[in-house]
Amino acid sequence: MSFDLVIRNGRLADESGERSADIGITDRLIAAVGDGLESATQELDAAGRFVIPGAVDSHVHLGQLSSKGDMTADSFWTGSRSAVHGGTTTVVPFAAQHRGMSIAEVFDDALRRAATEMAIDYGMHLIITDWRAAAPQELTAAAALGLTAVKIYLTYERLKVEGDQALELIRAATSLGLPVMVHAERDELVSQGRDEMIAAGEFGAASHAHSHSRRAEWLGVTQAIELADRTGAALYLAHISTPEAIDIAKDARASGIAVIAETCPHYLLLDESAYELPMERAAPFLCSPPLRGTADRAGLLERLASGDVAIVASDHSPYTVDQKLPNGPATKFTEAANGLAGVELRLSLLYTAAVATGHISMHDFVRLTAAEPARLCGMYPRKGSLDIGADADLVIWDESPWTVTWSGLHDNVGYTPYEAMDLCGAASSVVAGGKVVVTESQSDVTPGRGRFIPRTR
Ligand SMILES: [Zn+2]
Image 1 (cartoon, rainbow, N blue to C red):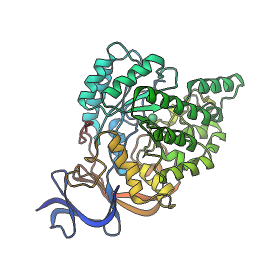
Image 2: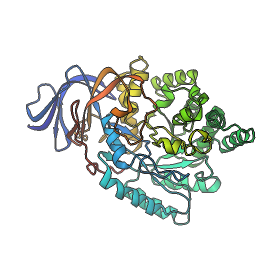
Image 3: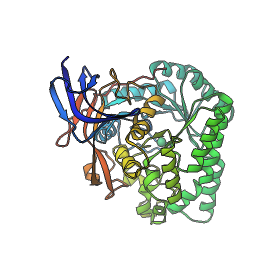
Image 4: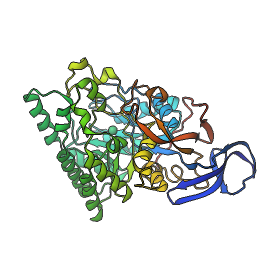
């Protein structure tokens, strides 16, 4: 058997464990795994390094308009370019319906833009904010095209779905075999906290953290679980920031409710003390839920190891300094764009926080960043595995220490909240769709090369 590409002498790590072997690639697929594979047109030497499945990021915002009217700083092109340099070979962004819009139109528009812009393979989630009369048929059509999941918000005036609308929407998604991703914060508490701060004339970043309290997350998660219990939904809790919320999900799972939880690298590495800074310096760290404290991070790390956190996704929400600070230093917490960019650093951040510190193994790392997100999106084992026949998306992982600087990244944001942070672990070479697209010395990443990966049931 001859191969297009062979990766030699790597320490392969996937969900099932580790072993040393070569990987042979033919026609964009993993064709053979074993010792002493015959020579190929192109070879990469992975001696002394891990070889892992290309990572899947099941939560990124690219080429998306926020409810406040801010366009993300990254398009499908720049976001996918950034992702692949960090070892992510599949991203799943959102087609976002805002109220009054047709689901069919927003889904078609997102797929059309993705087809010409995406540098790597991708799925597509759908945010629904308006369960209109035409919505059930439109959702059925999107599911037939391969929609990966539906996302709803329990908070934010312009995004939230409530009451019978929420139940109908979730039942419709569930009957189509789609998981339901939920932004779970209790709206009453968030609004009340925000109004208290406005009434007190407190407009700093700390007021954002006050309104998006831990308790708002716990009650939001409880509310989402109740919805899942009433509808039989497969629930995907986005961006969980507190260990207590992970435990609420665990108890629900023990009682038979299909619920999994995601956390993000910023909740494992960054601290809420950033919100005490003047707005000019605090704004880059504003996100919802907000950053938390030392005990929360320790609790989340424990729950990565125990398996109670299923997925670590980036929640890449890229906004420029101008979007973060529309009124300069005088910007109020209610005016700043919310979200952190992190699609390129996700693997390095998680490796630094959890693998290098001995909390999780390399195969846990692959489970959290590749296998589980692929499973959630109906892409496993085509994505997220080293099985023969899987797509040839592979990363050679270098465990060396390095220091973050935005100029070394490939996004379009203009800064990184992780500037000057010392990390260890990075993708030294990346194979996407059978092609070597990133090596230590160069990259060959082009828009439009990515393929849409439909959800399979
Ligand atoms: Zn998000």
